[in-house]
Image 1: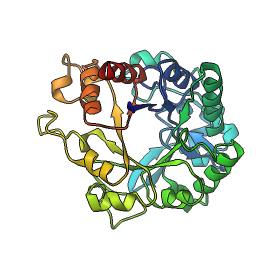
Image 2 (image 1 turned 180 degrees about the horizontal axis):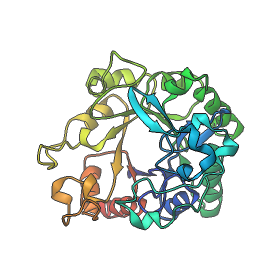
Image 3 (image 1 turned 30 degrees about the vertical axis):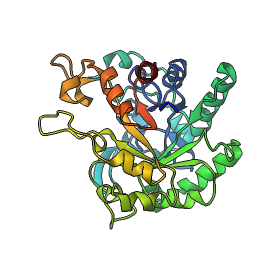
Image 4 (image 1 turned 90 degrees about the vertical axis):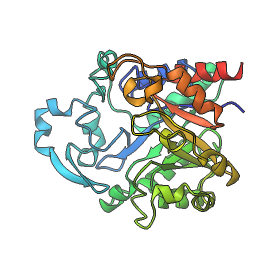
Length: 329
């Protein structure tokens, strides 16, 4: 089966992430899934933003009535300053406009700033369902639960709100069109007993899950760790450097055994995040001197696909779809 293409926050290389325009463009480009990152409003609504700090992805700083809400807060062990979704009601968040998160790297996307309001999870599901009806192919949704422990400490029940949404939006039987992701372990373990969706354990090259101080992602990537993950999840989502490491000069080197080890444990492997800018590519795939110049993403994608991955997240879905087509030709 060819690798699945998941549009990372929509076509976020070309439009401000998590906007209707980004999702619609990703669907037009052939993405199989669209991905919303989920955070929460003060009144318990599931909001689609990369982080709960929204100073860099909205025009909140331009709203003088919200100036006093700028604050500092610890999020998963890191001190962050800005404006946080949990301090705003849904109605207040809907008065804000979305902006490009990486304007210096993606000025062409910044041209679409301040044109769209923040979306809710319900609205992203509606976009996918409408596109499925329009195109005749199933457009899946791959939500990521962001910082559930943080929200739980604020008496905001992300898991409960999500489960309620799954039933209300008639997603409870969408085993292959709903992929639920999280860097934490507990939420996925609990969801595995409550909904039949595909569950994806996210991992990174460093650190570990916020809700398990006794574990690192490195531990979880061992055969023993993968066997433990397979008890509650069907997929792992890993930083591309866990599959193809970089050396000290940023050159991609020999692949690890993570993909065959995961497959041996019965887990599918999803790699994140395939981006075109030189900044995000190994040295051998860079072109030109600028970090924002597009390098040879096609060749990098082909290398990743050749290793037997089951899916990729990409900010540029058209490139991921094209490389997949050429790989299987």
